[in-house]
Amino acid sequence: MFKRLAAALTACAAALTLTGCSLTERDTIEEAREVPVPPKMVFLGDSIAAGYGLEGYDKADLYHCDSYANILCSDYTELLKDECGHTMINDAVSGDTSQDLIDLLESGELDDDLKDSDAVVVSIGGNDVLHIIFGAAETLGWDEEKGDFDFSRVDIKKALSALTSMSDDIDEALKGYETNLVTITDLLHEKTDGEIYVQTLYDPVEYFKDWKMLVDYADEKIDDFNKIVKDGAEKDGVHNYTVIDVGNQFEGRNSQLTNMADYDIHPNADGHKVIAETVDKELRKGHYSYVVTVQGEEHLSADGIRLIVFGVIALCVIISVVVIAIKQLKNKKDEV
Image 1: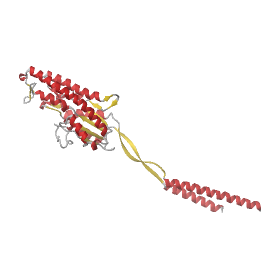
Image 2: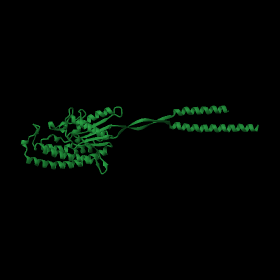
Image 3: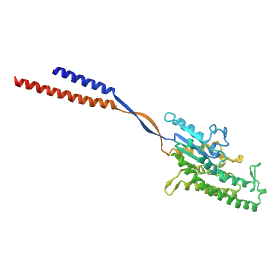
Image 4: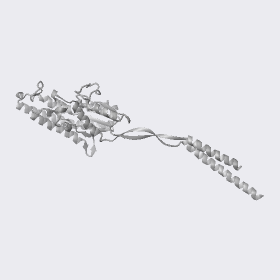
């Protein structure tokens, strides 16, 4: 009897062990992995972000010129190729003002692009103010054919009058931009959890060094513009966006970094490289991650747990039977 019970006990234990090993499993879990640059970034704004004036620029396809957006996309794609990969979307529109960007955001057309973005880089507002300055340049003596100021054409009284009139227009435009920038960032916060970056404006009027009155005036107004950008980044203890100070990087180098020699305010290829370096420096200060699905630690499945419980109960029953049998045998011996 004892041999049969021992054999049964051994067989049960062996079966339990073998069956238990076959009933283990691994759960899939999500794991965040950090990366140094944003896996998905979106560029918004005007012709500066679009790459207007560069070789290969096409307003219908912004991805084939050496704009700063494309420079960064190329670098980040290589950097993240063995990680999560990289996505860059450029929704900038040449000629857009800050109000145009508001209209575009409110339309919902950019919602899918902004969804799940890690960084949104905005270059907007130049068209709000610069066209006013350059619209008055001819009145102030600019000769487009010669590419310089023809001082023989300048009537100082008219020039001063033009500057005064222009000043009122620009001040109004700056107030509008300040209001619009708040609206833009509010709309972006509704549409993305990614970090928002806003670029300052460089001063292409710096090129006209021989016409000091205009240069000094434009410098003052662009400083006012950039102050709006910087002051809006943090308000009442709330972080609204991060500033990318492009204007500071172009200071003293606008002639070399723009196409102003051709009466074109846009950055040239060298200018876009400088902007790319400036944007990259700020982006790398951020914290980015992506999520992967991995296998967790091996553990018993629900069936495995049930089998173990059943096995324990079975063993307890067997042990009870053995104990009872031993007692019975002992009682028989005592009777004899």
